[in-house]
Image 1 (cartoon, rainbow, N blue to C red):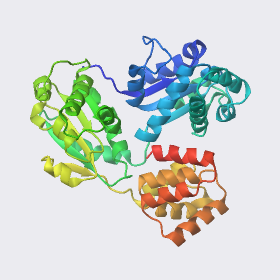
Image 2: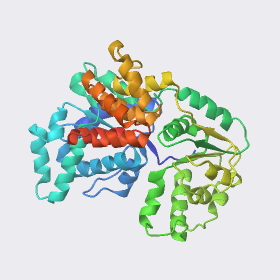
Image 3: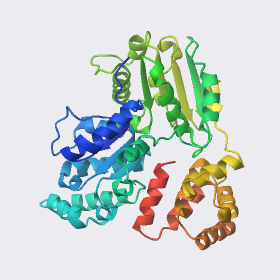
Image 4: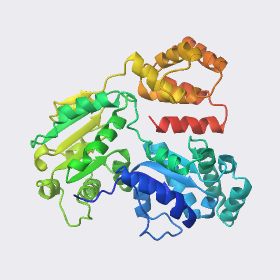
Length: 431
């Protein structure tokens, strides 16, 4: 099986004490659960963020940032954090902070011993960079995380972190059953299938779960998302999408990812030549035009028997134009599932407390049962008093909100401070 260069988890940490104790236990737990974790043992760190590390961060589904007292002693770690927070904003990467013997408020405000160490690291650094580091630390500290001082048993905390996964979403098994039937993994005949639905309905989350569950069946696999494509677009930003050089660069990354080795001296028709005998699993996410699909997976016959191509898009005409007649249209959750989804984010449980039932039901209704809206509203209302819930609902009744874009606009316009804004961006990154 080809080596994978995409990771489920990227750990960011500082210090041999963390590596030999907490982190080693965490990585062991990840390994036992077959969670693909980036390990930097063989990479020599320098003052700049090496391409290998940048690629590892951008291709990871989750970044776990382990903050100990010495985390801020390294400009390398702080630059690594900048890249992680960028990926959270741009590519919806999940970020999990872990405070190991450290007060989160010291990270948020750069105070205490952590703050002193941070100031020493900032010495002789450009002011602009110091401001960016401060912003990254403050935003990170506003994300829900794990605090070692709150756990009596470190082993249980490690297990809880390792269990954090997007598969724990409401109704996921129903989606899996429909897609697994459509894909018919036991058949040796190649198949192209679509996942279709409106923005915010959860297509990417469903696709990621499907990819994680079934990639082990194949000789090679790749999840082509916005982050994957953007790396080619950045190099040839001013080019037409069909520019030869950009197309060539995209193909090079694609083939290297599946085959697990760098390729040189190949032509643009090399996909069929290199992969015709390989059973592969390919996901192409957030497809807005034909360019990426035509370039990387123009025909199922390019790939070996048993291969599966899954295309995720909100545009049915793109699927039909490519001859993909079999697709799963992601439905909105039922009222009951929507309420459960909302409560997971608002109360961290499957149902509302008795005195919040009516308020929670109406709040979920205003999200239009759309999963992304349920995440945003639920996260926004978590921990707030009843009066704040009622005030928000009054605003929704007057404005007649319903669409996810309007909910996001409401959430952003209603921010009171930088902490609120950081929470909003975190919620949005989870959509």
